[in-house]
Length: 141
Image 1 (cartoon, rainbow, N blue to C red):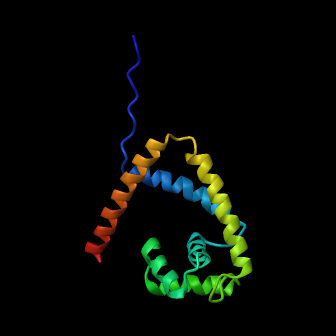
Image 2: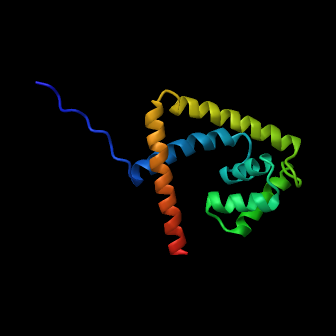
């Protein structure tokens, strides 16, 4: 007698939330030594990629789903920390490279050995869910 085949869990909000929180906990531990919050690290990434203040504000409002005053406050915080002064500072660039390298290594440990087809299917599904959530935000506003 053979054991029944295990069924894979369906992609749903609970699974996405559990996964998000597990990864966020690791990410936040990685950020702890830098003194940055996750939102500040996203602001630093935006300016490290060469966006000016207006472009960084637009990116932050779109990706973090925050209002413009909150985005500007994040940019003020990384400015006060000496990481941005109209352009990313050397200290800011060093910190961003360090965090990017750590996240790249983490992603390889978490996803690296998964089959490419599985990763592509998950990316497509999450892109659809994100688009639908963004549409819902537009309706709720």
